[in-house]
Image 1 (spheres, rainbow, N blue to C red):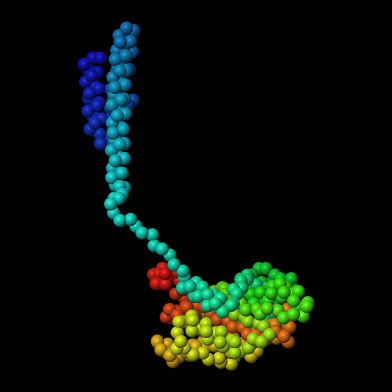
Image 2 (tube, helix red, strand yellow; image 1 turned 120 degrees about the horizontal axis):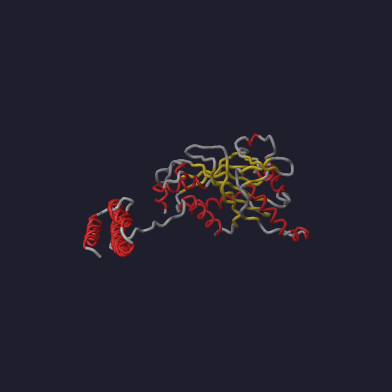
Length: 352
C-alpha cells in the first residue's frame, strides 16, 4: 500500500475519532466514502490505468477503503456505547435509597358500619338476607301494602329500568331493602311447607336485610344511592316489647355507650301497623340532649304477612329500617353524607 493511501487512512481515522455525534461522524464519512469522497474519486481514476496497473492499484485502494470502513464502524460503536452509558447514568437507580412503601388500604367507613351491624344482630340470632337491587313493582311496593297510586310511593318509585315484569310494569332500582324480607319469607315458607301441611308451627323468621337502595334525594344528609338495613322478626308471640329490647341492645352495642335513651314516636308506614319512629338521645358529648331519628319501625301489617305466604292470625312480629350511612355519621362525627362518596382519599384514610 502506497504512502498516500496510508496517509488517507490515518486522516480518516483521525477525523472519525474527532466526531462526537452520529451526525458529525456521517459528515466525516462522506469526505472519504461518499459519492464525491476521496476513495470514490480514486476508484474512478482507475479507468485511465493499464490492466496490470488497474489490478494492483485497485487492490490497494480496496484495502484502504476496507480499513476506513472498519474505522468508521468502530467509531459508530463507540458513539453508541457512549450514548448507552449516558442513558444508563441518567436513569440509574440509587439502590441505597429507602424503598417506596405501598400504602395499605382499608375498609370504607360505611362498610365498617355494615359489618358492625351484621355482627351485633348476628349475636342475637339474626340471619343476613340478600337479594337483587333491580326489583319488580310487586316486591318493591304492592307486596308491602303499597299499591299503585298510593301516596306513600311519591318519594320512592323514582328509578326504573327498561325491563318489564309479567304485568308489563317496569322493574325499578329498589327504594328500600324490604323486598328482601318478602323474598326470604317465601323461601322460608317453601322450606318448611311440610310443617304447614301438618299444622305445625314454623320456626321464627329473624333476619336483617342490609344493602344499597336508590331514591331521588340529594343533600348533606341524603344521597340518590344510599344504604339501608331492615330487620324482621316474625313468630307466634313477637311483640313491641321484643322490638324495644332488640333495638335498644343494638344501639348501645353499636355506639358502645350505656348513656343513651330510646324514644318510640308514633308515625305511619304502609307496611306496619302500628308504626313508630325510633329516636335516640345521648347523655353526653357534642350531641347531648338532642333527639336524633335513626330508624322507622312497627308491627308488620297483616296484609304484608299474608303476602309473605303466612297466616296473620298465627304469625305476628315487627320490622324496622335504619340508614347505616346516618349511623356512620353519628358514630364518627361526620356532618355531610356526601363526603363518604366523593372518593377523597385524604378523608377516607382517617378510617383505615
